[in-house]
Amino acid sequence: MADVLLGTPVVATPGGPPPAPEVPPTRTAGAAPPKGPRHVAGPLAIGPITVDPPVVLAPMAGVTNVAYRRLCRSYGVGLYVSEMVTARALVEGNVKTLRMATFADDEPVRSVQLYGVDPAVVGAGVRRLVDEVGVDHIDLNFGCPAAKVTRRGGGAALVARPVLLGSIVAAAVHAAGPVPVTVKLRLGVDDAHRTYVAAGRAAADAGAAAVALHARTAEQHYSGHADWSAIGELKSAVTDVAPVPVLGNGDIWEAADALAMVAETGCDGVVVGRGCLGRPWLFRDLADAWADREVNPPPLLGEVVAVMRRHAELLADAFGEDLGVRQFRKHAAWYLTGYPVGGAYRRELGLVSDLVGLDALLEQADPTLHLPPEALRAPRGHTGGPRPVQLPPGWLHRATDPTPPEGGDELVSGG
Image 1 (cartoon, rainbow, N blue to C red):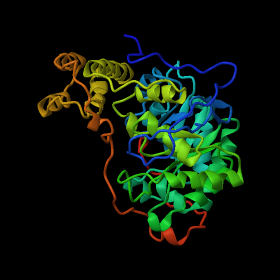
Image 2 (image 1 turned 90 degrees about the vertical axis):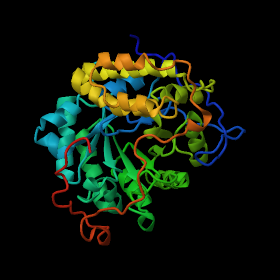
Image 3 (image 1 turned 90 degrees about the horizontal axis):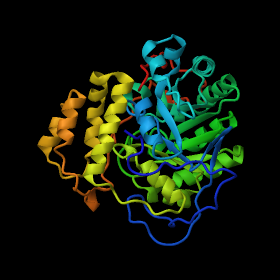
Image 4 (image 1 turned 30 degrees about the horizontal axis):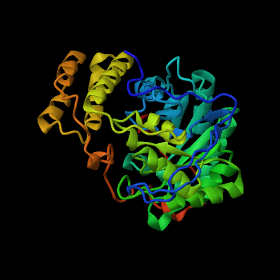
């Protein structure tokens, strides 16, 4: 079965970038796109890597494995980042972690997200990724809001400690050599501690090749709206330190959202997370929008079913049929979000155990079903929050403390 099921993949344009297309002007995330011209960002340079269009798949635990990255790549060029792995687990040779840090032979850029809180451990993990895995890009996780991460002083908790964050970035950059290191941040722990500007400037000063901002606090988790204005503020602040790209993340559900974010904030590219869950063709839509081509309407259910089958097949190839099909169950729910298929059908898909059973269920789907317009922007993936952020004792009272939190690296890869 061909990899491309809903359109022709976009290829990089030889001989330099095309003229920048026009996009709608400023709008609030979730609103209908207005009319009027604005220019979008050109190709994104992350060290020696050119990303055109400037679109990045956000690392997501249990999602952005080798199978999903391959499926997304079939719809267009972008930077597709792996699941998070932990630096200490890499250093200790953890089998699960090393398996997660593997890539298909046809992946043009081997991109991995790394978690760590100790500069020395992160540096050692980076060296292993560069020397043994052969990665081309490393992204450092300073954005995860999960309690099991922040209570150890990791993820989004580190945005409140810009000195320590800068030391971690500097260690990673030194160990990576020519391999570019980027960072992903949150606004801060909560609205009372929005420290993203200081953290972003520290990362840029330490040699980060790009800074991405999920414009929510850790307390928000995935609730409410992303504060796009903060992306523009970070862009201005980081540019004063070093001319590194700034990417925006949050509330990109359609291609028009990405163009609106760039127009509103001046950011250099976008990071797409939950918006592509059950919709890998969003990367084709983004490529079309960036190239000023017409974006296709949402696919009929028959087209979605074909992609679902391909995704399950890729997971089975990568992890074995039993584990692959079990991993696919959560994706099935995302693919069907908004389509009027009924609760009983969804429950049956949530219990499927092999490809034969999956085929039998998919054949029952009505291929002519449309996605209702009101369901186009239905949230997928995490929706929880706000909730209090768990932090190590006294964490917010020592913003300039460069000391790594004790036990902060003892975390299982995949986050």
